[in-house]
Length: 613
Image (cartoon, rainbow, N blue to C red; front, side, top):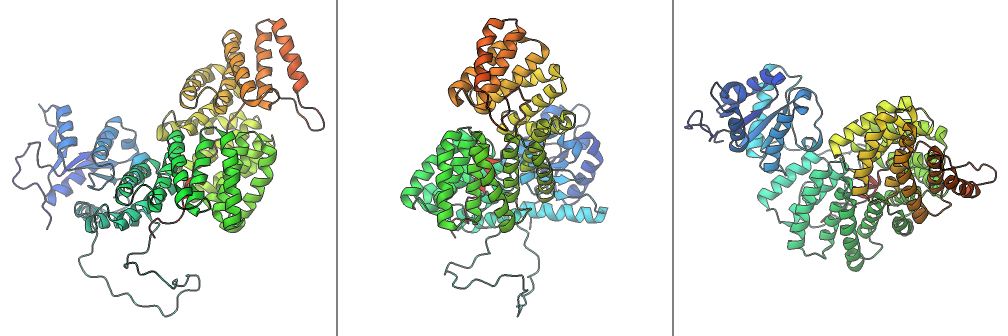
């Protein structure tokens, strides 16, 4: 029996509401229909269309609804998702129950719209494509389940009929199982894991070892799905509990720390990921051994964090060591070995050593296609890293079909809204910039930038890379007036987020110099160009290709200012340092498109099997 909560309540009071219905104006008919169904079933509902009558202070009433109702029903549609008021209302409910244990936020989709960000992680009630009777039954059934926290049927399930012969493609049941109490097989499905976790928390308690093992598995699933914010909250909670229950040095505690590192990399907090990964790796090497799979997973995560921070010099030896260990311990074709190879390629690409990166990633890509298939997420990441190496070598003609094929596969396998899909689309933009096809690149570059800014935030590493690509495209089109404010704002953000010496910061600074030169504002360009050259000489050396590009930019700025006396020695030295010999190309001022490389997915997916199993 469910207490509907509405009987005996005073009409119009701020207490006793079971549901506050949040909607936008175009969906008022849906909101009223849903409210009618709920009230007909005995629930008390606060809905603006009925309860915000003349004389009502709607702001106070709205606040009462968000704070006083037991749950918020968010009527989801494309219009609602773009509504500022709607966003405030569902986020208030989510903030009151971020883990969803009390199910305070019930998304009800009335059209087949996406669920961005935090909404993606919450199971919705879908009413579209149903007739009125079906929709009413479906709504009330799932509301009832949300209130009870279970979907147990009213009648007992049928007794399972034992199959004599399993299908040929079904693996045989493994022999020699442990004596662990019989539990459901560890599922990979998010919804199944969430239901199992909720069940174990109620029956076993939140700190039980089996409950914590399921929480660890769910954190892994969330990372795999790219829902990093939710994964982070769950991993942090699980880590605190495991430290308290099992101790800081326990293998399972350290495994959960690895999950948290992966989530931190996913949201772009590579500095926090680095600190935690370094501590975890030190403990694992002491407790487990340097060659233990969990220690190797953490080493790969640490290399990914270093790559994300642009510290490729530190990432390279760690990635090389981890790759060698994985090859020796698990073999050259093991999925974890291939992930370690991808991490090493990312470091080599970051250092500009594309000649070393290309044969390694070509071999890794071939192995992953053979071992895991052409559509596996890890194979697609390897393909993207190969595109990066080809771009770095200037082989855009070879990169273009591979980048397009990889993006097409990614969209089909993981969908257009997956974070990696936008990363691979960024690779396509980088190829188009390299080919000088800026008109084709512009709409895709602007779309990616807009999506990542809304989904990840303006300071996320991938958003900053996308902004740089927009600047490069606009420069290539000669639209310097549009490029300048984007370049200046993004450079300020990158200096704050990544630091003034970061390779990507210097690349964007180079693009800003090109923008200012295009506008003829050589006076503003000079300090940026000279600062970038000084930093690249110090960090990369005087003969590095990027340093020579910056030197050429300084010459162009000085010439533009008419300071030929200052320009001549820089030009002569730069010419002397230009590469010579067959196939050598002078380093002139390129458009400097950038390609985001998903270091984090490689590291995250190396996080091993289920902890506690």
